[in-house]
Length: 336
Image (cartoon, rainbow, N blue to C red; front, side, top):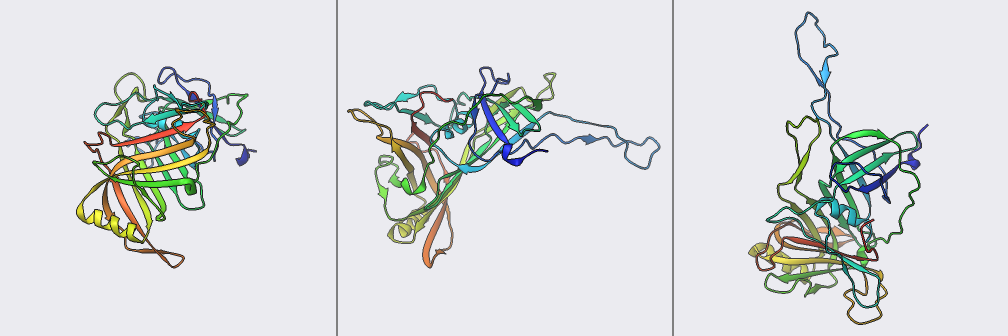
């Protein structure tokens, strides 16, 4: 009899896209099982029966694993970015005397970047299934006061097959990204990203990134897809403000159709920088983007306090020369 508590998801970074590998990393969070399996097509025919016969077929092989919402961490968020945005090829040392490292991820804008595909194992003590050529189709982040930043993601793959779970893996050490340790910055497009902090006003956010990666099915002798193509990412989200002068100011930005450079920055525990030249003295996660405010919700109330939520769409900004960027500083010298 299977036990829910014994479910587990493990990840392996593929050397060659589509060639399954043994998994190497345990995903720390709630575990689900593979869904979006192909539907069997029942053939419509007239052969002398008033009922459906058992003739049918599967026209494709496909599956997907939805990673349930869980606390985002400075370590495991890298997997989502690697499989959804691009593989980080230029990890840089944080500097100083710390053993910290900086990862930069930019969604594709003019040229598709190189993705890191994964083999995923998921199941419980009853049965494990494996999915190769996995990528992140979309991911979401959200945060509110007195909570951790929450992360969810959807990982399609080319097929689900029975497997034996990779043995001997241990859960990694992780640190949660906390909303209360976050800061919000908003700057004019001619200014510097992260130059102007909005204080005493940031009450929450959410964002969803559709990565743009799409499977290509063709007549290649297989039921599963044989390649992936990026057709363009899309990022939408919202920011909730205390309805004070800062809240009124963003209403004015909406009315004027003004683009803003926005940074969500979250600090973690110390990186151990004691010398000169260190970029970050603490673990860091930053979500930078250029945004057009698309709508403003009517005033809401939290504990009798008026709050304002704006909705935005990330846009390419020629002066900044970017669309969005995700920056992580942690103590990992490589993605596990």
